[in-house]
Length: 269
Image (spheres, rainbow, N blue to C red):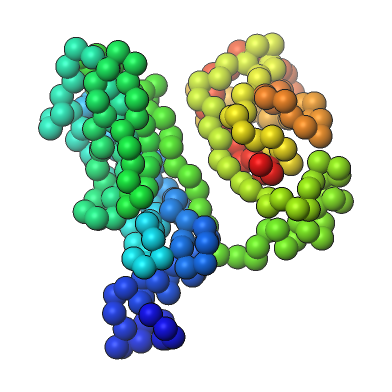
C-alpha cells in the first residue's frame, strides 16, 4: 500500500483498517492480535434458557496483514439464541460463541454431536468468546456449561521485552532468560473448591518457565468477600499453584468455597 496518512479523505477502507492495526498489540508488524479489548463475557440468561447473554465490549480481529483489522463493537448486552436453529439431539455437542468479522455479528459455531464432542474450528476471521458444552437433549444453557475462551488483548504500548531485558533478572532472578520473549496468558479455573482454606489451581501445560502469576478476577458463590494469598512460589512452578482464602472481615480461613478464578500468567515458553 506504500505510504499514506491515517483517516485521510482519499484513503480506502483497507488502508484505514491497516493503519488501525498498528495502534493495537501486534502479533507481527501490521498484524493486530485477535482478542478481546474489553467485555464480551458470555453468561446464561436470568433463568437458564436456550439462549446466552453477551456483554458489551470490543474485539479486534485480523486474519492477515492485507485485510487490515476489523474492530468489532457490541455496544449493549446482546442475547444470542442457540437452540432454535440448532436444537439438541441424543448426543452431546460443543458450540463456540464468536464475534465474526465477516458477518459483523455475534454467532454460535455449531459443533458435531458426539459422545465425546470436539470443539468446532474457529476461523481466523473470528474471535472466540466462549465454549457451550451441551448435554444430550439439553434444552437450556446454564452457567456450569459455559467456558470462557476470551483471550485479552490491548492497545499497543512499549514492548515488555524492552523492559524485561533490563529489569528481568532483578525482578525474576535466575528464572528469567534474556534470550526468550516474555509472554502473557489469561488462565481461568472454574468451580475450584478449597479445602480447609487452601485451594490448588492447575496451570495449563506448556508454561515451562513461569515468571509471575496473580489473580485478576474472583467470583465467590457466597456474598462473603475473599482475601486471596498465594502460597509457596518457587522459581519454577511445577503444575499448580496453592492459594489461601480468608475472610478479610474476620481473618478466618474459609473452609469450603466454590469460586471462579482468573489468573494472568507471565511466562517464557
